[in-house]
Image (cartoon, rainbow, N blue to C red; front, top):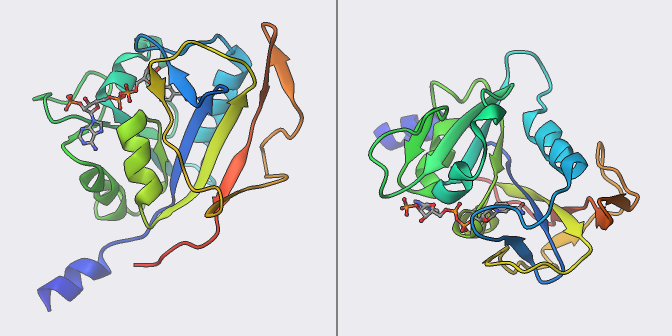
Length: 200
Ligand SMILES: NC(=O)c1ccc[n+]([C@@H]2O[C@H](COP(=O)([O-])OP(=O)(O)OC[C@H]3O[C@@H](n4cnc5c(N)ncnc54)[C@H](OP(=O)(O)O)[C@@H]3O)[C@@H](O)[C@H]2O)c1
C-alpha cells in the first residue's frame, strides 16, 4: 500500500540529452570545449531554457567537471534548476540548487514532490558517464546532437549510441535544418528520437 502511494507521486518527465560532437565523437579537451561556436552555444542555451508556460522550469543535470567548466557569468539561468552529480563534493556548488550522488536520484528530484508540478524537462548536459546513464533511462526520448563537421583533438568523447533505436529526424521544431558555419567551422543541429519509450 505504501509502495503504491509513493508510485502515485512519481510524474514521468522527458529526459533529453544535448551535446555537440566533432568527427570522432569528441566533445571536450582539457575540461572545456575544443571549439568556439558562439551561435551554437546560444542555440544550446535557448533549447535548455525553453518552457511552455511562465512559472515552469527545467531540471539541468551536470557532471562535476562539466559544471566547473562553465563560467559564473552564465548564472542564474532563466527557467532552470541545476543538479550537480558528484560522489566527492560535500556541499552544493555555488549557483547550483542540488547535489546528487547518482543519476536516478537527480531524475527523481524532478519527478516527485515538491518539484514535480513545475518541472517540464530534464536536460542532460554531460559529461560522458551522465550521458551514458541518460541514454539507458526509460524516460529518455530525444537526443539533441550538433554535428561539428571538423576534426578536433579531444580527451572527452560522447558515448556510442544505438542509431537504430535513436533515429535521426529530418526536421524538428525549433531546430535549424541547414548547415551553418561560424569561425570557418561547419556544423549541423540534429535531433535523434527514440523509437519506443517505456512507461513506468
Ligand atoms: N561538446 C559538448 O556538448 C560537451 C558536453 C558536455 C561536456 N563536454 C566536455 O566534456 C568534458 C567533461 O566531461 P567528463 O565526462 O570528462 O566529466 P563530467 O561528467 O562533467 O564530470 C565527471 C565527474 O562527474 C561526477 N559524475 C558523473 N557521473 C556521475 C554519476 N552518475 N553519479 C555521481 N557522480 C557522477 C563525478 O564526480 P566526482 O569525481 O566528484 O564523484 C565524475 O568524476 C569537458 O571537456 C567538457 O567541456 C562537452
